[in-house]
Length: 155
Image (cartoon, rainbow, N blue to C red):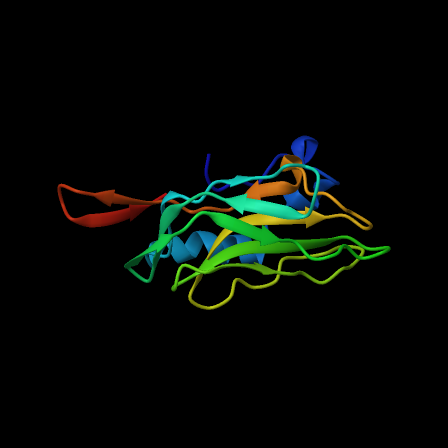
């Protein structure tokens, strides 16, 4: 699976995940600048902690391929009374990171850091202590290598 905006009925924790915003369009548009995921980088969670495991893969930032090693990122402590969205990203050095959103009654995504590829959005409800798969929304824009033409196409 790749880039997703879930239907309202399928969204975890409310319809906020089902509403595209400026950052969604920025993520999609980055693909036309050859910034996205070439392969892999799928996420898994155990449901028993605040850790998201990212599989190995290859990203592309502005047309340059970068290997991504498998590894974990830790989602920060949830706010006591308000939800937020965090973004899991990989930068042009292959380093995975979490961009923590601001807790708010109607949270929005923060901007994707410059020179980075967004992999997942994570819904972090108030008082949360364990990330489940339903809290992850896949934001990987796929960049497909056309080996015959030695070009790249994004979806």
